[in-house]
Length: 128
Image 1: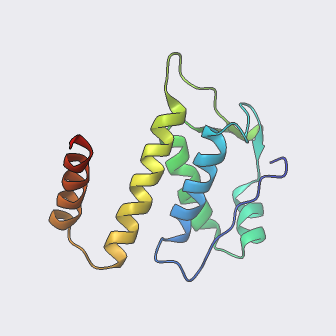
Image 2: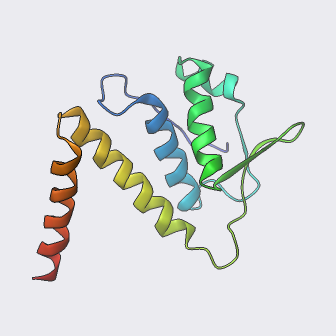
């Protein structure tokens, strides 16, 4: 990773793996991490952040499931090319923002119904 920094706030209600996932997704979608750019190994990033390797591995798995990164044996983990015609930038930002919001709301002990209703109200408020 060329100068892009990932930081984890251990006092945040957002789980560390989600902080890593959201930050890397934002760096990829903004172009700060370019297609083909190599990411640190799971062990290296975990050591850099002072976290368990499983925490970083989960973030990488979720990024891979979202087609933002690819891991190939011998080639490491790299930023994946966007699918043809994809709106990766907007979709990744929406997903990251949504996950952050949900993690925040759950940390405040709101239930699923309350969270969904808050989103519905916000969407309705935009129409007026």
